[in-house]
Image 1 (cartoon, rainbow, N blue to C red):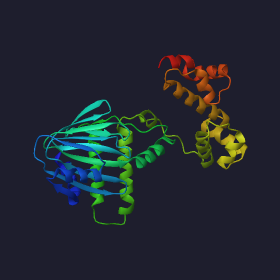
Image 2 (tube, one colour):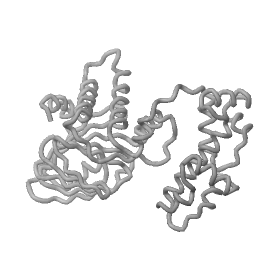
Image 3 (cartoon, helix red, strand yellow):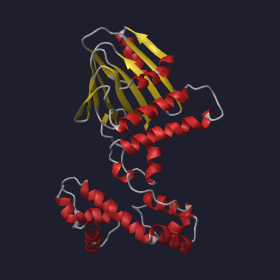
Image 4 (cartoon, rainbow, N blue to C red):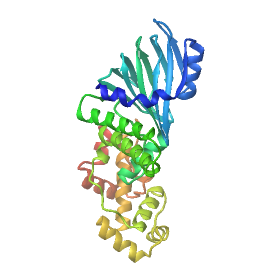
Length: 327
């Protein structure tokens, strides 16, 4: 970590939440700021402090325990947490993955994965807390679609490469603006920098949405096409008609068909069939033991299994049964 980054973090130290040598006070105060957790003190002297800075959705903390500790918060649930040792080292287990973190390697902890942390004696860390709803809203905007499952990041973030240095610059820039004197641009600058920080995390840190985030951005869709897409996505389990889709979009049947053909190169009902086929494919990929192809086909409105198999093979290059047997 470079000296300039330490200097950029100074605004956080302006807002101390506590400094204590009392183990009960430390656990209670850190739980209040972050999440309730089990805290087991190990070797070393308790010399703890927590500092915070934040505005808008993001919160920045610097946390020191002094002694070595084991922290067991379970799943974070409501937020993503970035951790980066400023001094010392720690070991973080995210689900089955163990990460050794240091000033050269940080960790991105996803909200839906089990978590346990071992902070070594003398470790001080920077924490960045990002609420799930803020992260998911930005991700939906980038992929122009709803999220089918929670975002899961690769927990290890190298900090000495180009992406890692850029991430540190994003944090430093946000903190500088956070504590800069008030100006006419401040009300708009902070939200823009917050968005840039979240964009960087989504676009540069590997995740289960990395492939979709890397796709070329589609040209802007007319409002009625986007409304039709949202309606179709929400009603895929139901019996859909062209008239119902057009009514939900606020356009006439003719206008909607022309717009779909122009912007998506298919009709609205072809779009429905493709979306249902994609959902059926995902169900076959994720299928538990005992799943039947017929059940999956019927679930997504394919009442003729022969035609379903033909369309599936044309799209995915193998039969539905072959996909199922590979799991």
